[in-house]
Image (cartoon, rainbow, N blue to C red; front, side, top):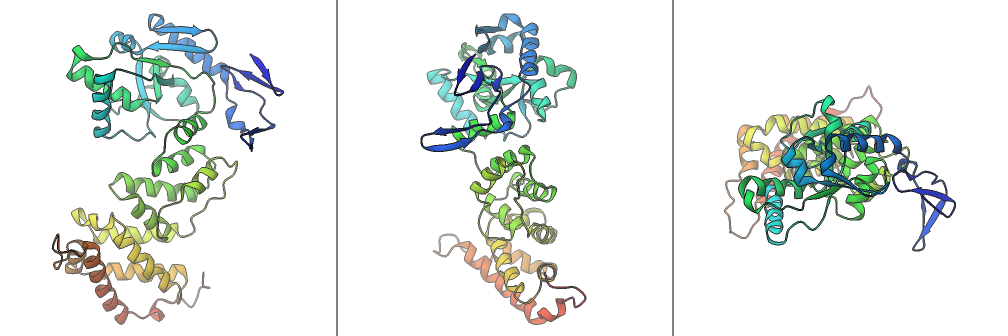
Length: 378
């Protein structure tokens, strides 16, 4: 343990007193309380893992660095290996590429793991690498990969397909500084690697400092992306604003004690999407998964808001969608005039069909028919 600028720094205990501001490269940083965790509970969990398989775990620097022989862990089978449910599954292409790299050059970086009991203690759901939940009674003999799941999946692939060429020096380590897992993931992914799209949303959801309404809205975006929606389209259906949810606002909210992040139009956007999905069923839903349709809807909704309040404008757009005939839907999904390679993008034909169907609806349904004179405008 050493003393630095009035703060006690413990290798396993994390920064225990971080109330003061620290200047780094000309920038003043206020240390977060989320760095402080129950370090003793974390160390106890590590000790229990050691007791399960002492031959595969070595304390290289007592109180600082503990190394796990992952080859031994895999072969002996006393310790289970799991992952965080919230983590995005690596794409098979990435796993294949990593496997080729490992076959050519071996393992260059250790995996970062934590005990399964620690992950659950910090509020995270865990599963094994086949997607199965890990029973509570087995958590004490489970390690969770926090950083390196693509590498581990590539190693598994090599072991299954080319066991004679499997790497023999697969190592992992427990954190040298115990901090809140949410903060640990942010540090790993924001400061070292680049998070993609809904990873920021997932990180914010785990921070637990947003309202229920905001959490539902962000969960909706993640759900659409999992269903194959382009991230831009998923954001637009929820926000009713063109473009993606800006990452700086999500990162700022992650680090706020009580985030004020709010998506005022999410209630309306989710309702509109629900109607659109009921019309564009089965394979036709693909038309909703890129930005052409949601951006058209956004334009028409905003225009309607010039004459109606948001609730009325939403009813107006829902009526338009409900009124689409099957032939309209078919033309929007696959415009008959579109020919690949003719120089005009498919989106232009889709927009033309959308506009034609909307003008027919608008002519027969004036804004006045959607005004609710009993309610105040929003």
